[in-house]
Length: 115
Image 1 (cartoon, one colour):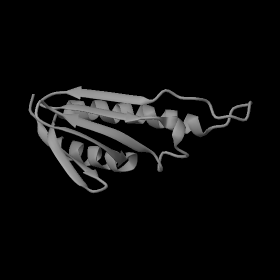
Image 2 (cartoon, one colour):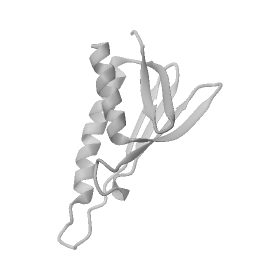
Image 3 (cartoon, rainbow, N blue to C red):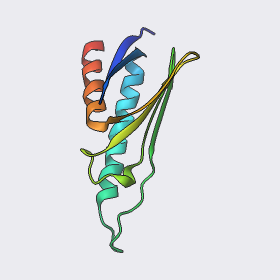
Image 4 (tube, rainbow, N blue to C red):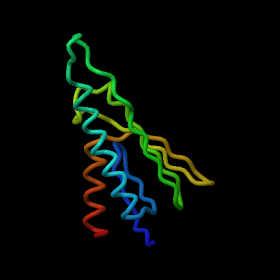
């Protein structure tokens, strides 16, 4: 399975790491399901309160470990949502926050190049 570096653009820079096209597609699918949760979290139920949704927790283990986490219950819309990204290997650990929409754009760009 070949790996191509995935570049994630962050608020103050970027990070690149080895990733596979199948893992990128899995993450894209997880985000698509999560977007439905975000939309549902903003809907008000009959009780006048939004319904609580499960957070997105995506993990990938390859040359590095990647974890993407987001709680849909704290954002007013998908455009305001931020994800927590943890990237680590045996020598370094990076934990940061990124805009969900930027992550989606980076994934789409990666999949276009890898495909």
